[in-house]
Amino acid sequence: MKKNPTRCMVAWLADSPDVYALIMTDTPAQVAMHAPASSARYSRWLRFAAVAGPGLVVMLADTDAGSVITAAQSGAQWGYRLLLLQMVLIPILFVVQELTVRLGIVSGKGHGDLIQEYFGRGWALLSVGTLVVACVGALLSELSGLAGVGLMFGIPSWISMLVVVAGLILMAYTGSYMSVERIALAIGAFELVFLLVAWKARPEMGEMLTGAFSIPWREPKYLYLVAANIGAVIMPWMVFYQQSSVVEKKLTLADLPAARWDTAFGAILTQVIMAAVLIATAATLGTTNSGAALDTVQQIAQAITPTMGPGFGRVLFALGMSGSALVATIVVTLTAARTLGEVLGVKHSLNHTPTEAPWFYGIYTVSLVIGGAIVASGIDLVRLSVGVQVMNAMLLPIVLGFLYLLARRLPQPHRLQGSYAVVVAVVILIAAGFGVYAGIAGLL
Image (cartoon, rainbow, N blue to C red; front, top):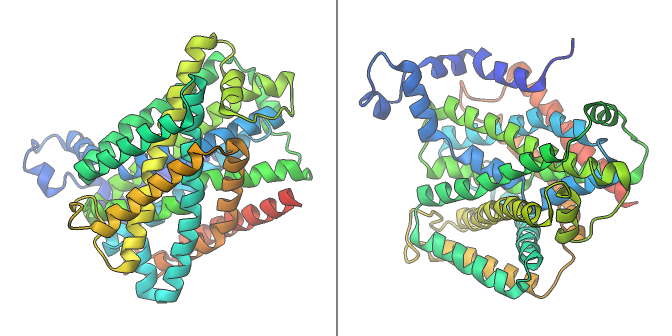
C-alpha cells in the first residue's frame, strides 16, 4: 500500500524523540502562568495560536498571483495531468521550509546573516542577488495581478497601483511585525474562495484520477509547466522570509514544534488551493477546449467561474486573486528589504520606526513605488507570471544548496544529520535538478 505523504510528514513531526518531547511539554512559561495545570491540551493550542503566523503567511503568499495563473494555465492546457504534482510537492515544500524554521529559531539570525557568517560576504552577496532577482520578478507579477483584477471592474491600472502602493506603505510605516502579520493572514484568507470555485465546477472524479496519472513526460511544453509549478511552490524568497520572521517574532526553542506544525498546515493549505484552481480550469477548459491559452486575468476569471454567473463568479475570483497577490506583495517586499538590511548591517525590522531603520523602510518604499510604476505602464501578466515561476525553479540550486549546508552546521541536537539528512539531500537534489532540467527542456 502506498504511503500518504502528508501522513508521513505528520508522523515525522511526532516520531523524532526531541520533537516529541517538545510537543508533549505542557506550555511555554508565559502560557503556563495563565493556564490551569490540568489543561495541557488547551495550553498547547494556546502555544500554537501564539506561535503560528510565519508559516501560514509565507504559505498563503506561496499561492500568489503567479502561482494562481500557473495553476490555471496547467489545468487549461493539460487538464488534470499536473494535479498529482501538486500533492507530491506538499512534503517537499514542508521539508524545505522546516529547515528555515530550524535555522531561524536555533541561530536567532536571518538567512543572509548566516550565509555571511559561515561562507563570507561574497557568497552572501551572491545569494542576496539571487533573492533580489526573484523578489523583483515576484513583485511585478503580484502587482500585475492586482492591476488585472482592477481592470475586470473597469478600474485603470494606475489607480489600482496608487491605492495598493499607498496602502501597503501606510501599513508598514504605522504597524509592528505582529500587526502586519495579522493583516497578511486576514487578506490571505480570501484565497479560500478558490475551494468554492473548484467545488462549483463539479469535476468528475473518474476523469480527475485518470488525468492525474496520465503524465506526458516527453512533451517539452508539459515539462515547461512542470518547472513553472515547481518554481511556483518552492520560491527563493520564502526561505529568507520565514527565517527572518521567526527571528523577528522572537520564537524560542520551546516554540519549535508549534512552528513546525504551523509550516506543515500551511504547506497542505497552499497546495490544496493550487489544486483547486487547477481543477476549476481543468473541469471547464481542460475538458472542452484543451490547450487553450489564458492571456489575461479576465480570461482566467471567465474560465474558472462559468457555473456561478458572471457577477458572483467575478467577485469571488477577484477576492481570491486579490488576497493571494496582496499577501505575496507584502512578503516579497519585506523579504527584499530585510535581507538587504542584513547584508548591509543596518536595522531591518518592522519593530523599528522609520527613523530608526531608514534603509529598511526606504528599500521597502522604493520597491513598491517602482514596481507600481512599471505595472501601471502595461505588462503581459500571464507570460511574466509563468516565466517568473520557471526562473524560480532555475534559481533553486543556489537557494536550496545554502539552506542544506547551513542546516548541517547547526549545533546539536538540532543539526541536520543522519538518515534524515540523506532524505533531505535527495529531496533537494530532485527538486532543484528537475526544476532546472524541466525549465531548460521547456525553453528549447
